Length: 116
Length: 111
Image (tube, rainbow over all chains, first blue to last red; front, side, top):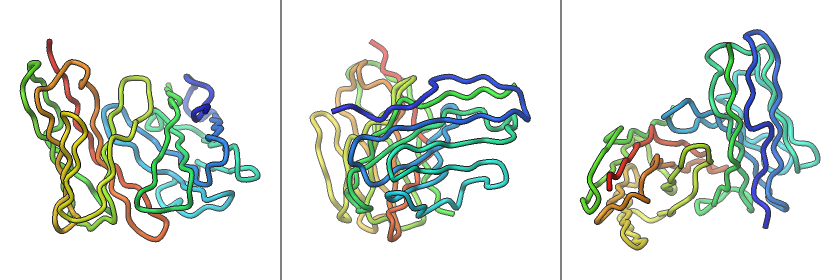
């Protein structure tokens, strides 16, 4: 079974530029997550989709970040415009079922963003 | 905002030693998960504990969920270099099981 795919793996941009990340979850997984992970810290949830609907985006900086999940499958996360503090690894994860306490999340390798 | 504090933040030990990592919060969680993350990769789930007081063992790793479901611990016996990595606890709560990750514990096991 293929894992969660993310692209690109690395991205370097200058502040005020725009950037987009792509995620392809494991086939059939209902729930998709985007996390931001600052080096050495735990991931912070940005947005959680259940099928193609948003169930939590309370920590998404909506003035500059946006995300969509097309047809309940692939997802893109966009930052426009980027700031220096957005430098981080952006992780995508998916889980097979609708939310439950025993959910297992499967993570992709992440996209490392550097904003200069 | 729910917070999960892990301690210690960093741990460097010799191969064969034992260690315990703590994960504490003032919030109640429906379940608590532990992940290990290696450089350049995403976190990988080690275990999920659901019941207050639950203890789970995974070879040399022992996980415990606090009675009040607010805290957890991870104990590693006879650590090996392959245990090196970033250990993360994560609490699930709410109707959609929102995931809150802990601050992380970076473990280095020296051969």
